[in-house]
Image 1 (cartoon, rainbow, N blue to C red):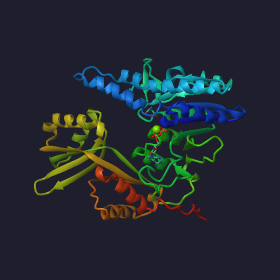
Image 2: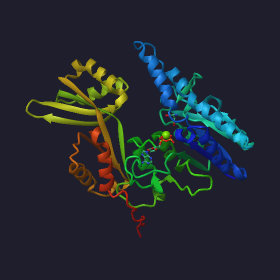
Image 3: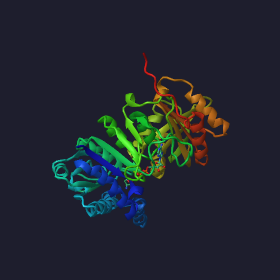
Image 4: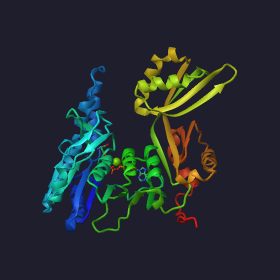
Length: 423
Ligand code: ADP
Ligand code: ASP
Ligand code: MG
């Protein structure tokens, strides 16, 4: 007998037919006395619809009091519907099941509305209920804060609900069902020759997710890595009993392939800001970063071009697209104090990244990457690197071209040789 957490994303519960199908997959796992908790997202498109309602009402007036607490209680409602529907579908198959909302578990979070972090999940009610043979159908994406208000975990947050629940319930498995049959070398919607990976290391998946591969929410991978809980990503579109191996996200030592670059990710969620003729003196970049952090804006890539002739510099950096207006207004307010002559901004930019743990010990990745982009005449505006990734900022128009070019430059469509252990 095992304890299993299964998570189904928006397309997997998009309508009643899909919910009935999910009930079949869950029933199969519950066979033989396994204890099963299921985490569900809202029906696909539903969270966007709810966010749009909030935005439309908010746009009616000048910004006044904060509304994040009400935003959370509205956008969390999509998951309430799917958890109830799936519980009914399971009961109609003769199984015992009940829905659980975040506050009923309770899944406790901090106070950061719309991007709350999970503090603790109590298992004293849900655990015995599962042990008594009830399938727990948990509304993903939501929790409750210390003031008893509903909180949400950021877009894509049901992945994190599932991993956190698996940790709290000491589950034997955490299976994330989605609309693709695993993690691919890049988004299969962009590169038709993208290849499904059998396994991928936590570190690589963490980079891919944080660089835009939305197949898993970044925080869910971070949690799984911290608790060394392997996650299996697989398709919900398969029939019960079909071969459905998916991809195992696991510790580096358990991965099989020998490869320098494992994947290509992209994010269109970027905007670029350039401060013109900033004084080239110690402390100037710190002042810019302070203005951004006071406005609650995260700065990502940074590049500085210095002109020795007049001791000035142009400073270019990126922020999230949703934060662009906030960032520009904070910079204009601080212009006198920071001391720059002008601002330029551009939100038609994309960050494209190559990721691989093999980059720690191999050279030549940057050369291959920049040659592949240059051959397609793609201009690189900003560069950022870490031990296992190189990211470039390019004009959005070239996103698909760049992703495909890099995917093929690193031969990601071919199956690499298996890893050879050192003697
Ligand atoms: P769910 O609704 O199940 O949470 P998401 O839409 O959040 O599903 O994530 C699945 C999508 O992630 C896929 O449809 C795919 O287009 C996209 N994706 C991006 N990068 C990758 C990748 N490297 N491997 C697989 N899917 C990816
Ligand atoms: N429904 C939420 C979203 O669309 C959470 C999730 O799907 O994981 O972001
Ligand atoms: Mg998702």
